[in-house]
Length: 281
Length: 281
Image 1: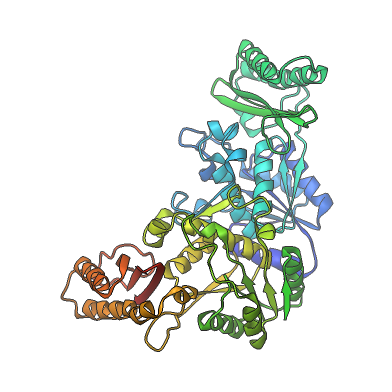
Image 2: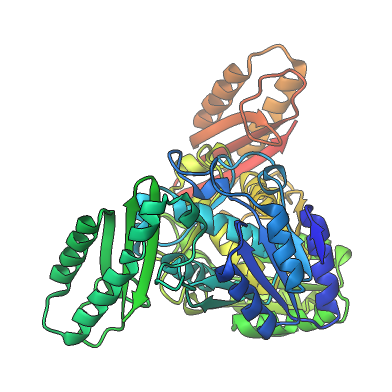
């Protein structure tokens, strides 16, 4: 496994592989790799000839009050895990490589408001601008044929798909299902912020989503009432919910048709930790 | 010469050429080709193995009050000129190909304000957003090694260069000097909007730029005074000037150092026609 910090070296190596007729898979990460990430890598490996993983905590997608400084950085362990999976190339750029002139005066990508202004976008200012911009940059550096993202960040996955379509990027975007602990808690780097007591409560987020799904399937309650009920349940468990939203799965629009395919999305804080999760109906 | 309207066909054909080891040049245009465009094509041909030209009047870069509807469209003549130059491929997409969901709800690119909010950006709302977005799309479809732009649209050239750098696009951007009529008028598709009388006045724009350059080189006048003097000269000739600005050539910032390399940029209306031009000092 090669680990490169220079964008030029990554580009040159991948171009060489592509000239040899190989298809390239790409998994962009912020490191602190867990089983969820490794599943994305395996999915990429099953669909391409060589896989590139990037590890970069992107400052542009953090709002000023968020956890950029404290975000867990565990590069040595991450590289061990990727070596064990026989990943070909890991790209670990510095901020100077990614934003040589800083990330505030950099060109950026904005994905349409209907996908980005609600849900996470309403609570994390310019978050999706930061995500879309760094993914654009990484896509241009790596030039993969396939890129894999986790469905845990469901809105992010749709934002990337929309951007790829709007900008005619010649890249196939794959979404992979969320990996959960035995008690249902979705794997996330932010889970390690949880105290012991909070860790006991955390799986209730998934329980509430599951119950809400059951209630939707019984079809005897208004969706807005179900959202409100879920928010109250979360509050009773000790969460401070940002939102619980039942949305149309392809656009995240509010459903207006009984045959719409739905997804339930939620974000809730538990102490200092902000958890998100989602469940398709 | 092939003429294709489908982005997929263009991508596939160019990929095939690149697999054969050829370097691809690209000249994006809005059609109505004149000697200025043809010079860009020739420059691309001198630096690459095959050249792709796109002809597309991009609605996203026109403000509502501008000349989108009346912009001259002369496809048959354009194709004849490109055939005569032995261009390999012309991409002539429809609005449906470029913006299948319309150009208002499309992801877009924003280049930093210091390059885009002044000069043309101050008079043409969201113009550079439209330019950067369509160029991003065309770059992703064509995936050229080299792209050529005219220095006549000097601010646009810098905007594209900044975007390519910020987004790590693996494309070399070349700028080619402005081509002028014998009397100094910069070639432009919009020149044909001019009445006979306006056409006589139009070359004064370049004359005023040239005089301003002489005065800068004599170094005995304040730059702001020179800008004001140039604006008054244009008004006396019958123009309605939007701006005359003496700027640092690499950033378009206001000069703050006597050793700065300078460019004089101007935009002025003559009747219904808006002319722009620039001159390096």
